[in-house]
Length: 384
Image 1 (tube, one colour):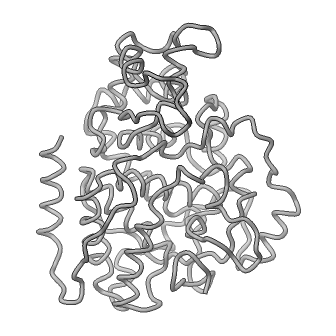
Image 2: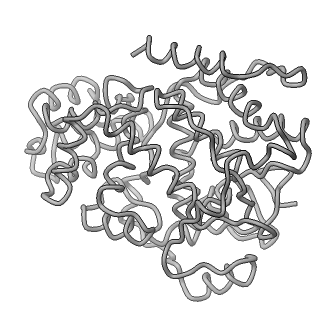
């Protein structure tokens, strides 16, 4: 695993052309290797009454945004292009990749942080960098402040640092939405997937509403498979694409708070989850020795044995060891609609690395702002 990771980093360094203005200062990571639960919210929030996506909230959103959301998800890869900044900021892709590479060398968990941040941005109102805003002129609580994000969402500081380097080189040119998408593209390459040029042309939203996040627009860690399929279908993804996207759990970790009861006292039964393998139960019990520990202070556990590599081991563990941490991951193997896809991913080590980038292109094209829509922020945390 380490050899794959280091070889990938070396290859990226060889591919990147040096630029006299792009000296990267030493980066101090905000945290150690902790990618809590890519794509999923907090378990203890699942029974919280949500404000919902009310008619009033939706009207306020549509009144303030320069475009109107359709009822169905809209994927627009045709509106985005490779080499979008070749004329206006030709070093943009190199600046982003070099900056993120140095961050990952010090904190490999940044790969998972960025993958999750991208998902949380795109699945709410589209890939418009609304997740990065600290406030908006309206004064409404922003997405970042939602209980679905909060303490668990990491990576915004990484985007801030990379955006600052781009502003020094090409002021007011590269959108925050593209910085996030390009960094996400670099993260996949650093995790062992084939390098590909990112699509650019996204613009930044001037609106960010926590109430829209909390309207079943992000999955919860204890949802059943029907809830998962409904959400992904509403966003324009089929069952196979949903399974592939959840395969992002191939990287990163989750804390014991989210899954230890599966090995200790599943659903109040006093016994482990029958869908867990014996080896997995023992592993969880050893990794999570104190169920009374304060939330978010329990130890982390890797989703699989290669936490910095996007490979099919996550799926192999499901099939061969009945090992999953999150109950939503377990559903993928137990449900007859998704099990054949999991088995296919587990059996063919080349399939997931091929399909994941393809699905991510579709994700990062979801409800994008382009042309004169939105704006290009100077600072990703605030509108212009």
